[in-house]
Length: 405
Image 1 (cartoon, rainbow, N blue to C red):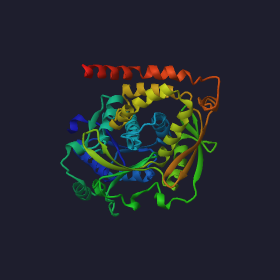
Image 2 (image 1 turned 180 degrees about the horizontal axis):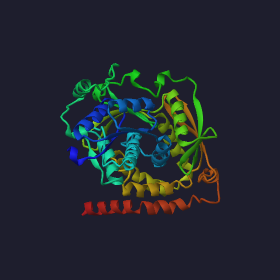
Image 3 (image 1 turned 180 degrees about the vertical axis):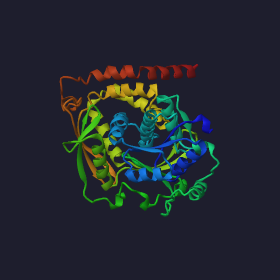
Image 4 (image 1 turned 30 degrees about the vertical axis):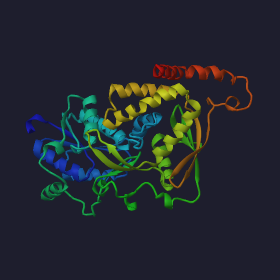
């Protein structure tokens, strides 16, 4: 294997898996390994990651701050679509993987690497998300997925390997579940959560207080949208990462954004995931409220009919596919008038729309009123209903005629 690979860029997090992978790649392929770490808002000490990677054998470490790009180019486009997988999951990890993989590919180009590697297992979705991005952006790169080719069977084997090779292993008490975080969400899975009857422990949650412990007084906020994209909170303009972080804090303080879901992985099995997405939950509710007064009915219905497929594309790892890009263009076109302000009440796990306004609103109380107006003639409804029900009426008449014979 070693003669086929000249230099590898590894997606590196500094955890047990990627620390072992880093050393294993060096040992197996006998070539330089570059550790690539992307800051997508996971809140970790990235300089500490640099030091650990170098101490574990990395020939070079590349750390990039991608928070603004992540929110602007990945989270906001999905928000404009109201994207949600299986009616519950706001795609936090699904949106983060392609930008990390894209950064990894760009790093490979810069350092002249001919291979990329990741720490995703052979049973999950992330392996697909990483590798489809590699293939879409730089098809000539060789892909190394250690979990699919090495002899290690599980975490205990990794710990033993780490200790035998002097790789630092945290001595802190191991969490009985795995988690992944970024600026959009934090996810929890495996371990104690594999029992679908067992309620997640309260001390597991990081971003949100429990609704029972949230303030007894409601918090009111206003979200300003321009063409479907949030641009300000309570009248204060904010950059994408700043805005999402701000709304995350407000949502977390009010116990908003927890989801407990048994979802269908792309590889075919069901998996339980518990998610905290406070800001994303608030912004999606606000966005739909903004659309309710600014988007044409038929445009909305066509867009909504495509949402399950759009969310599925992202979940399955097809962010950099022609079909996702085509659908994104349609979605973004639908957002050209989604501009205005939505007022929300945050209270004990609930996000309630209490107001919406727009200079381009399609709602007019003069037209919606039950009082007299000059635009709508109520007598016109009679013919409309007769024609709408004609096929149903004919079918019933024919059915009765046949039964009478």
